[in-house]
Image (cartoon, rainbow, N blue to C red; front, side, top):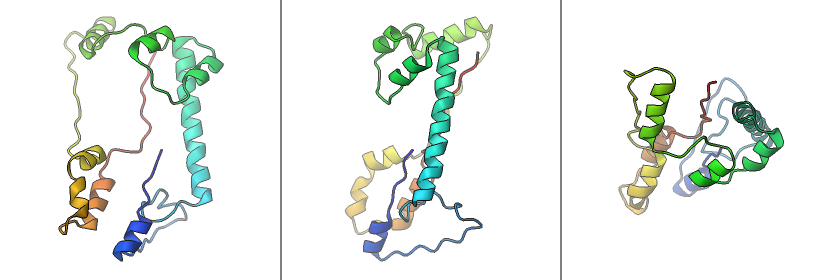
Length: 161
C-alpha cells in the first residue's frame, strides 16, 4: 500500500488544503500531508491482516506449509515456470486456456468473460501526460482529480474452493 504525499509540491505552488472531517482518521492516506505514526500503524495492521488471510488461502488451496508460503510470498515476482516449480500454479497456459478449463471444470459452457477497463489511471498519466507537469497549462486540480480516480491502492484476490 502506498500513498503519494504532495504536501511539499503544494507548498511550492502556494496551494493550501483545508480538510474537514467527522473523525480523527477520516482523511487517512491524504495526499496533501505527511502520514502520522498512528495512521501508519493502523494501515500496517490492515496490511498484515490481509497478508495473513492471503497466506492461509494459499496454505489451504495448495496444501502447502505456512512457512513455505511465507518464504515464497516475500514480494518477489515469479515467472510462470518458477511458479509451477514452486507449486503455486497447476500448469502453464494462456488466458484462453484458463477460461476454457474453468468452463469445463464447472460446466459453464455458455458463460461469458467480462473485463472491466479503466478510463484513466495513474500509469496512463505517467506514461502520456507527465510533460504537462512542466507546462504553463498545468492545473493542480486536474492532478488531484486524476489521483483520486486512480485504481490504487486496494487489496484484490479471489479464491474459491
